[in-house]
Each structure stands twice: as C-alpha cells, then as structure tokens.
Image (cartoon, rainbow over all chains, first blue to last red; front, side):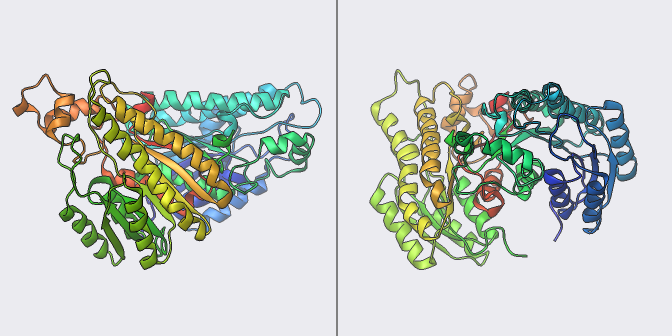
Length: 273
Length: 278
C-alpha cells in the first residue's frame, strides 16, 4: 500500500534525536524523503547535553533502513546562511520541498539562577530559528506552485503561562507563544498559495530535552510544580511518535483544508489548566 | 493492512446522510462496526428537507458493502430514552463501544430579536441537548471498554459568532463547554473528548434554497445556483475554496477516533480552510 506522503520531500530541523528524529522516521515510513538539519552541538546556557553528530547519523541510518533518501547536515537554525546552505544542498539532491517541520528547540531551564544568556538563546533558537526555517523554505514552495504544509512546533507553554520565573523559562514560554503569532501570520499570507501552516503544542514528551537530570531536578524542586504540570489523562508524558502522528495528519491530504490551527497533543493539560 | 480503527465500534448520530453517513463509511472502511441513529424525519422549524428512512437505508447498504456490520435505528436525539435504547441495542449486538460521533444537527436562521421561541428551542434541543444525550448514553459503555474517544461536532460558529444564526452559534458554543467539561470528567478513565469545527460543508444542510436565500437575498431566486453561491461561501474561507467535503470532516473524526491521537483530549479542532484566523 502506498504511503500517505509518497513522492514528497520534508525539511526537518532538530532532526538528530527526540521528536525531530521521530518525525523523520514517521514521515519516511509514509514515503517521504527527508532533508534533516541539527546543530549537533552544545549551547552554553543549556544545562542538559544536546545532540551529537552520532545522533544525526543514527537518524540517517533509520530513515535509510526504510528505503527512503535523506540528506543530513549539521546546521544551526540561528545561522541563516548555514541553514540555507543545508536546505539548498538537500533540495539539490532530493528535489523541491513539500513539507516543512520547524522542530528545533531548546529548554534552558535549570535549578537556581538561570544563566543570563538563557533568555536570548531560547528566543534565538525557538523563535528566530523557526522564522529562519520558514523564510528559507517558502520562496521555492511558492515558486513551484504546488502548495505545501508547514508545521511549527510550539508547546503547551505556547498557550499557557508555564515554565517558571527564570530567564530561560520565561524565554521558553515567550518564544513558544511567539511561534503561534508566526504560524497565524504565515497561514494568512501563504493561504493564496495553498500552503497550509499549523502549530502543534505537546505536553511533556519522553525525549532527552525533558528526561534529563537537570530538568527532573528543576521539576522536583517545587512540589507544587508537579501538580501544576500534571496532565488530565493519567499519563506522565507522551511519546515522540504521538507528536509525529499529529504532524503526519496535518501534513497529509487528510488535513487538506486545515490551516491556522493550534493543535494541542497534551493529554488534556491545557483544557484542565 | 489492518484498518486504523479495526475491531472498534462507533456510535454515530445523524448518520442517514451528509457528514454522518460519510463518517460511518470512513470509519467502516478503516475497520469499525457502526451503530447509527437518525431522526429520519422533519423538525418543523427547519427550512430544508431533512433525512428520510431511505437515506438511513442507503448508509446501511454502503457500510455493509465494506463488509462491516451496522445496527441502524430511527431515533430522535432529543429523546434520551430513544437514544439510549438504540445505543444499548447496538452494543448488545456488536459487543462493545469505543467511539462516539455526536454529529446530528440542524440549521435554521433569523435575527435573535425576531426569532420565535420554537425555532430557538428546537435548535438548542437538537444541537446541544442532543449532543449531551449521545455522550451521556455512551459513557458507561466506553468505561466498560476501558476507554474511548468522543467527538462532538461543533462548527466554526462554535468559536465565532455569525449574525442571523444566534441560536445555532449558541448551541455550537455550548457544545464546546460540553466537550471541555466531559474531557475533564472522563480523563481519569482514558476517555478522550474533542470537538470538530467545520466551515461550510458541501451537504444538504447548506445546499438548499433556504440557505441560499440567507447568503444571496439580493439575487433573484432563479439565479441562486450552487455555482453562483460558491464565491459567497468562499469569501468566508482563507484557502481559495467555497466549502469542504464531508470526507474532510470524516478524516479529522477518524484521526481523533484512532489511537494515532491517543493523548489528544479537550481540543477544539477546526477543519475550516482557515476561516477562524482570517
């Protein structure tokens, strides 16, 4: 049986591990070829270990195991020129892009005083990085005239005031709210080109960004936080594939008339708030 | 390949035609058995022809053509006893319940100041109370199955007001309140509750002379054709289309019904061609 995305090409940022890798594998399983980028390096204000070149190589291996093609490059979403070069290299090999997943993100929350640069770093990666990703991809999508689908990864912190009072946590929440503004504006401006733009809003996902000593200490430091962040459904976290399944639906023709939508995948968290 | 809702049973109200029939066929195509109800009769204040027993028989035929089972009953969602009896009978025959699509709805219009009380009350009774009845009757069965998914059909008018449809907007906004409350009440039992919010859908509920009059009272009646009306419906949408097809709503319902959305609850999901953010 043909996959839902046969013949499509998807550009995915933050694809080395976690949700990004899961998206690459899920979309590839449905027939898409993948242009993958990831920073594969540490950012100073981020207290948990970030991705590595080996992580990105593992994503490549898993996509290729599905008999799909993947072009993967190390690139920082904050670096417009580097990101553009990676995108163009992918298009040169795989052809024009139909799908864009702006997934790369950091969560520079930590116990005690969060580093001064945390605010700027998280705004740069989570908001400006998303802007760079979309800006780089859309001219060729518009020129081609075949429409397309863009999904921006926001968060429950993109529709709720959560994340704590530190510089990193406030920046995280502000950046993820900002992504919603980007999504709505792009949905409006790109609709005439039949390019759909939506955002997903995960609750805690079982990935290295959440499941690490620093984040667990941060969450354990304030007992009221655990209660405040509890989901409505009796699950502590969702899995990366749950976000991938939402994104797969949004980018497939099953959602051909869905645009401008904020889609929580949050085990009822937002509704319970 | 196994269907996306294989082995599940779905209860669908308003299943004789339009979106409800489309949901029945789409879910059956992905492996679900169906418990269908429909009024198959007229509500006096509704200005277009409603469904018939023949329509419901056609839904039965189309589901059976997919080799799925269907138990179909004429029942009025305003009558809780009738809804419960039809559902209980369906569960007795098909063995379980996993999915609810509370889809039955009517459309009529008029400015709130001039609206007669019966028009208001019929709308609230069918489009709001009828939705609660479907959910209420289903909850014990879903609990017995160890969880499930309830999808309430609201509308873009459930999130945004449109003049001259105040009773419809009120009922559809009420559906959101119902959804949000049920989502909280049922989350501990792994029963998910979400609402879908279609823009105009190409069904008999909008493709009729009464609705055409609402959208094109300036045109002589003879000129109020589907083609002439398309641009007027299209003006509401952000994407360059006049309306969506029933299957587009079914694809959203299918996703919400399937395990692909196993942790999605309490969500208002527009299928609206961008109407709400335009």
